[in-house]
Amino acid sequence: MTNEERQYLIGFANEARKRAYAPYSNYRVGAALRTKSGRIYTGVNIESAAYPTTMCAERVAVYKAVSEGEHEFEAIAVVTDNGGTPCGSCRQVLAEFGLDTVVIIADAGGKIHHEMTVRELLPGAFTPDDLPRT
Ligand code: THU
Image 1 (cartoon, rainbow, N blue to C red):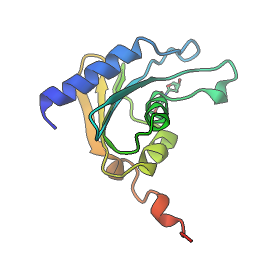
Image 2 (tube, protein in one colour; image 1 turned 90 degrees about the vertical axis):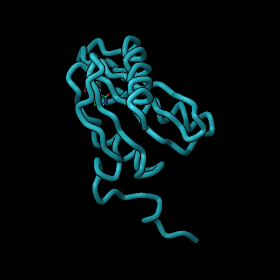
Image 3 (cartoon, rainbow, N blue to C red; image 1 turned 60 degrees about the vertical axis):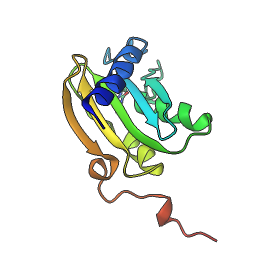
Image 4 (cartoon, rainbow, N blue to C red; image 1 turned 135 degrees about the vertical axis):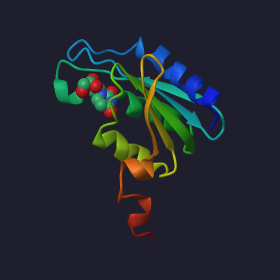
């Protein structure tokens, strides 16, 4: 992935982040997921007055992509104020669709704090390969 491609994806995540619905935490998260087919799906965190029903930006992006028939991902950019990393649930959902997806973690200024694969982000992940098939 070139630096230009990274910044392009981060730009999408940052733009999406403006649409985060985070009235309770005020912690706004934007994500942009690039599929192998070259499409980009964005996501934002969506909070709820019933706190546990809040949904993270990364999973919104993945669910949007999957609901459009996309299962193969290349990279996801996640943008927050401080370069926070994806939560455990988001790591698990990303792992479902491949351990090689690159995760770019950046802040609102476009600075990359971490870049790693889902394999590195969730070592020893439980994946579809762990389930016996009939
Ligand atoms: N959040 C995300 O959107 N992604 C993560 O991986 C970590 C947490 C959101 C959920 C909640 O709206 C806010 O950040 C604070 O936890």
